[in-house]
Length: 310
Image (cartoon, rainbow, N blue to C red; front, top):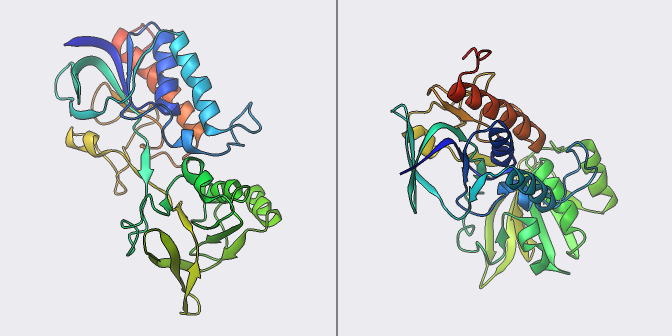
C-alpha cells in the first residue's frame, strides 16, 4: 500500500488548492477525484465574483488552478472514486474503486451534489429535458423554451446563460424575490427573462421528452400547465459527506462536516474544506480560503514544526 503524507479527497477548487499548499510545503500529496476535475465549479457558465477574474467560466478557472497544482508535483488521479475511509488508526486508510492508500493526514473536499425537485416526472425525463447543468446541456435547447427552477446565484447565472441560447427563458421561484446578487437580477431583467414568483413546480409532463410542467402559485392557490422543452433544476445542493459520516466524522443536521476555525474535524489529522463543510458561505473564494488553512494545518500536524500549536 503506497503511503502519502497528505491525501485529498475531491478535485474541485478546494481540493486543488489544498494540493498546491500541501505540495509547496514539501508534503507528498495525492488528490483523488471520482469524476473529472472541477466539481460543480467546472459546470458554472460564468463566475464574476472571484478576485482577479472579472469574468471567467468555471471550466477555465478550474483548469488554471489544476495547472498550478500540477506545477508543484501533486499526483492527481481522476475517475477514481473513494469507496471507504478508515480513520481509526494513526495512519489513515483511503480505499478507492481501484486501490488502497495510506496517509498521515486527510483533507475531505468532496463538495456537494445537486438537489432534486422530487416531483412526478423528474426521474422519467432526466436527460430527456430535465437537466441540472446549463453549461453541459444548454446547447441542446437552441431556440427552444426552457424553465429554470431556483432563486440563488446558480439559478440566475444559468438563466442568464440560457438566454443566449433558448428562444424563451422562464424562471420559477418559490418566493417573491431572488436570493441571487442584485447585479444578476438586473441582468436577467435586461435579458427579458420571465419570472414566475411565489411558485413551485408540481409535475413534469411529456411523452418521449419534456413537453410541459405544472406550476403552482402558492399565493393564489392556482395551478397552470406551462409548455416548455427543457427544465433546468437549480435549487441548491446537498453535501457529499456520507463516507465521512461512516468513518466517524461529525456533521451538522444538514449533513455538512463540522469544522473548527482551523478546518479540523473531530478526528485528529482529518480536515475538511469547501462546500462540504458547515461554513456559512458556499463560494469558490471561501472554498479556496478554507483549503489554504486546511493544508497549512495538515502540514503542521504531520511535520510538527516548532511553531505548530495543534
